[in-house]
Length: 79
Image: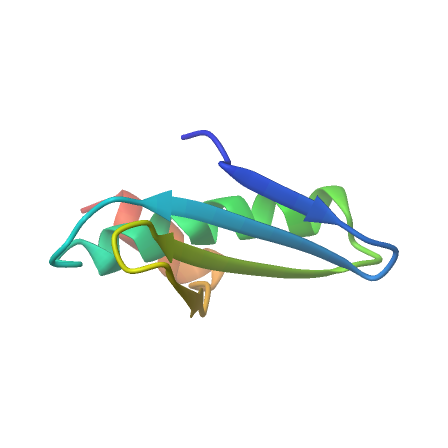
């Protein structure tokens, strides 16, 4: 995947992924996607706090995402 928006400050790295789904039926799949982004960014910027969220273009709502641990993410990759 490709990160839609990355905002870097002295203290944080914020990742926002834009979604056009009206029903939000794939949120768990998106959580895995953003978890991968989270771990990549956290490794690149260990001195900053990483945050990930979804932005739903239809409603204009932004939802914070709690990333999966590396172990949980790896387990999903094996499914």
